[in-house]
Amino acid sequence: MSVSRGPLREALRDLEAIGLVVSQPYRETVVADVQVDEVVGLLIPIRLQLELFVLKQHNNQLDEELFNDLEQIVADMKQAAEEQNLFALVEADIRFHERIIALDKTSYAQQIWLSIVNRLRLHFIKNTGIFPDLHKVPKEHQELIKALRSYNEAAVAEIWGSHIRDEDCLLCFNQS
Image 1 (cartoon, rainbow, N blue to C red):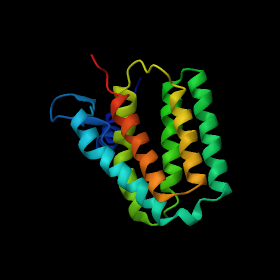
Image 2 (image 1 turned 135 degrees about the vertical axis):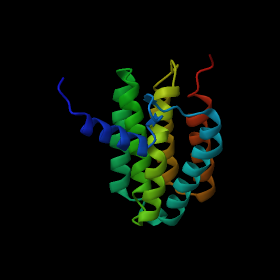
Image 3 (image 1 turned 60 degrees about the vertical axis):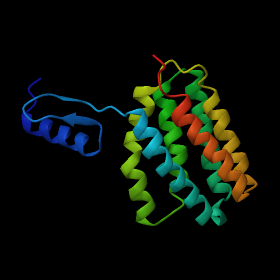
Image 4 (image 1 turned 180 degrees about the horizontal axis):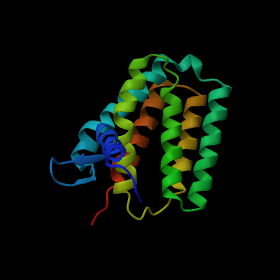
């Protein structure tokens, strides 16, 4: 393929920097893995706190533009579920939650999200086995939109927590 080693090494370093590959000196570079304890003990609590914080701080920005964007993303999820396209479904799911994070214009929320999103993406793609019902994902996100439309902090926190814990933990790890 006549690809120089320099750009290849640089690309692998970039992938390692965002947590998608693991390199061992003078050995191989392999696709990273995400362990159950990392997802349950670290990624989920950070993600949940971050999203709930943004929603609480910016509930005055829950407008029709946001809801239209979220509805379009859910439509993309439905199409991905119809096509049994897990990769497209994962990307739409991430876009949905990124749209929520985008309500916060400070760089801090964005930085925290960017520090975990690739591990979340890797987790979804690598640890999702034969998902029994891809249609559950858009249905759950439709419920999230419904909760946001009639914003009640406690109700949003409850449904958001249930969604993230269920989506990230219970459904995504292979039982084998």
